Image (cartoon, rainbow, N blue to C red):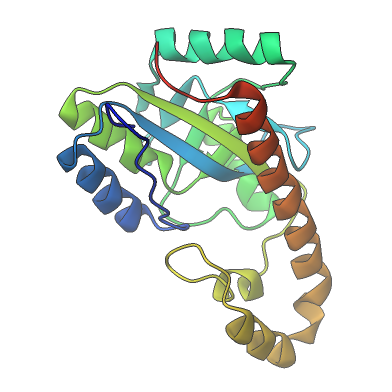
Length: 208
């Protein structure tokens, strides 16, 4: 976020790209950073579409970066007034996707996190280096019991956009991946819908 209008960039599930974009945002005058998007569920019972306003980010080395307490408290108060349900807990940010239920259980045990993504560490570190507040708002796209098939990863470009032709080509080669891919598409849609509805009802995520 800048002093005027929000700056928005899409990194896809790419930690290096997220870091580069976060640094570019800082260079262009951002006064606060938000890691916003989809995540994998780690905590038992998290369903697709569950919104997580993280208390902190667990980095790949096991250290943690806390989000801005005042900013998080302000968003929680705004959400309560607007009737938006937000879960809490930490989010683990990893360089490689936790694609299977076994991967997710292991990561949950190591990190004590409720969810996982691949971008929030970069945002947290960029904010720390620039002395800026940061926040993490994510929606669960793949619950703890879901598998993310390689096919689904192949069908998404580095910028996070769907590549339909690439997806179809992989489906032709790996038709057994279709059920898991369809579930991921359905759950991802639930996550994106939850984020969109939350933004509409909250109005903004501006820091206090």
